[in-house]
Amino acid sequence: MKRMLAMTAAAAILLTGCSEINNTIDKAQACLEAPKILTDLGAELTRLKDDPEAMNKALDDSAAKLNDLADKASNTTIKEATDNLAAELGKINVSSVNEAVDTVQKVSSETVTYLDELRKACT
Image 1 (cartoon, one colour):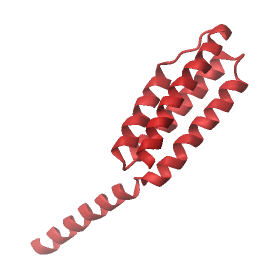
Image 2: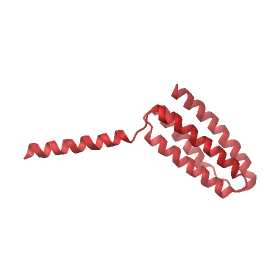
Image 3: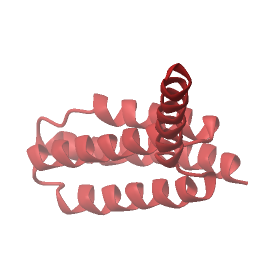
């Protein structure tokens, strides 16, 4: 009986560990997904340049997607760079239409830096 319980416990631990592994994504997938998130964000910010509230939501949504990607990334360099960009996007708060232009420029600058880090990590 004890042996059966030990085997059941070991199987449960193994299955839990396997499910955690299945939640990660490989480097190639992360290298494809991250630029897509940023391309979508760039298009949204351009479209929303006259709507600070919607722009803030787009920034928050993109930061959340990047956080999710970072949480699943199996490559440490990609994970750290993605976490850093998500944190930077999360700090941005657009309160007026005048700030929207500055925001687009800041996001563009942060994105260029991030994409350079991502390119290096993905090669």
